[in-house]
Length: 381
Image (cartoon, rainbow, N blue to C red; front, top):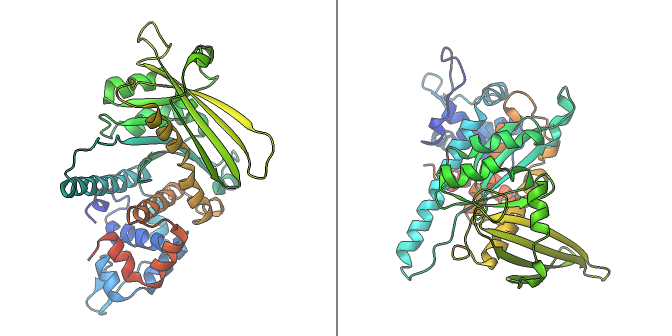
């Protein structure tokens, strides 16, 4: 509740009957049950018992001796006018502080000396396909987010004007975060010299950035390195989804200044993926090149391979939003509504993952059976 209070109220204070904190708390709790629209959120709040309404701080009318449940129009108009960036920042800070407290508690219990795992954040974009039918250009509204790859907690999210404008939103998205000694992963669109300088010089962070033909000089330099003479640093074979995948990584150190044509790059990376169906057939080989500011003593090849793979596992978060929460079919399309609803889904998934749930659909059903479970999960009394 304290973190939700950080979000500025967009309404004129005259005539306000329901506090913004109560509306947001109700929306968060309803999303834990699988609510995917303003109407579903309103219906859930209207159907819960009084002790849940009291915990959510819903307005109580002492004269009528009952709680005044907000209707759908109140919820819709308020959340569609909300500052979606501030809401994502507030909830992201809460999830981040929860993870930090959990990590410190674990270290207190287990005092055996261990290497502290690096924090890895992935910057990724996602189109809200359900909005493409309601825009003048016919293009879906697009969001750029930064996510903790270990907890799947979205720490920040901004709306951008299409995928091509993700580049200009990169620095504003990451600027408010403490990135000291953090590893940032991103796709080839963000392999920009300004981004690398910002991370290393401005935020004391590290990066792993994929290089493609949008950086022709760097891509050519990486591709022509003598990879055949470099030993494989790490390899693994994975079976799943009806296919077999073999992954290997080679890492080559370079000298700063006289080496790669990219700021602060000290290692070049070559990742090879071979995939074929379990039933048999030809192998399909894909080779990906990347650069990193991490020196050999700061990250082993196995670490780099795990962090690169974790970046693409963010697709699992998108899959949950699209399938479990039916984001692509969502009719929320006005004002900040699509971004706020996406932030609610991100928050619900992050909370449930933090609580140990692996099946989000099952978690939604369990929370829908008993409104009190939502309060317990959120820690609201």
